[in-house]
Length: 162
Image (tube, rainbow, N blue to C red; front, side, top):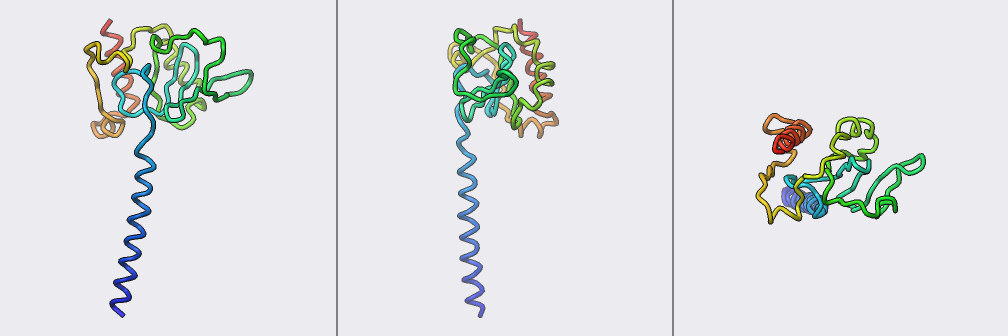
């Protein structure tokens, strides 16, 4: 009877171990940030681009913007932004699900950055010396700051560098 119990526990343990390792591998590869992404972030879900009032999903590599009377998600920006330079515009990291649901707040908090054109980008990090803060959002919470507070402090430091 004991042998049957031990065998059952062993098989159950193996099953649980296999299912948990499968869950881990799903979350490992989120997607690479584009070269026009800002320096200093080790995890990004979305960029809000104030100059064009649009969002970029790093994982799916798609843009979400307001067109007509609804939000649309496409692999390319609309034709009116054909000559828009993503390397020279300010991007704000937003790690929420469906950030366009809070668009009014994002526009009011970050709209002033639409005219900023000096944000360091990943493409140029090898050519320039920039201070890179590589803390993840989990580390920010560990150090007593929320990710949002840390981002504001980083933006404030960035503003003072001019």
